[in-house]
Length: 197
Image 1: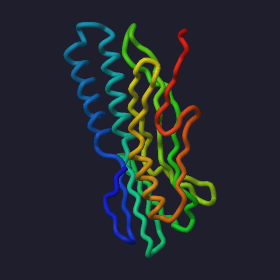
Image 2 (image 1 turned 90 degrees about the vertical axis):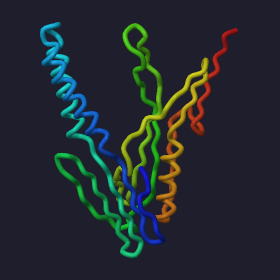
Image 3 (image 1 turned 30 degrees about the vertical axis):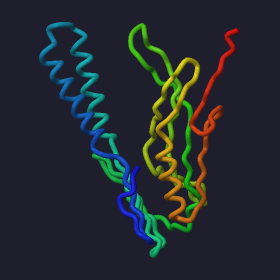
Image 4 (image 1 turned 180 degrees about the vertical axis):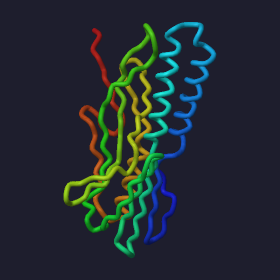
């Protein structure tokens, strides 16, 4: 998410880009090329190529961008979510916004491949607009933090910028901001010390 326009009365945010479509197109092209040029090498290549094409098409179809425009003078928040296969446009009263939240949670992510494959916990974060009636709108897409492991210490990073932007949106809208952290995490640094003695 980034702020594309900011004045005393207006704020415009944009999230997403064409990168999802580019990656999807690359998968489709690679799948087709593998299917054409490597089909005689192994009978499973055709199935792998087909899977790559299907994955590429799914990435292209589900890639989306979010644009949020808040206008204090009119008291309106315009929300637009675009996809290749459609768009969602809606308008809301700024007075109906209860708060802005950044929610973080642990998820397991596979790292490495083959015999070296392991699962590593990562933080996934997403900022949302919470309305007084309990409904919610995604302010951005889910983001995965970067992790660095040194011995038994796991250093988490990459979410501070998103939380700061969500807090700035809350301040502009004059609503509370809340950062919801997962268990066993404080301030983005989670150190696990094990007793080996």
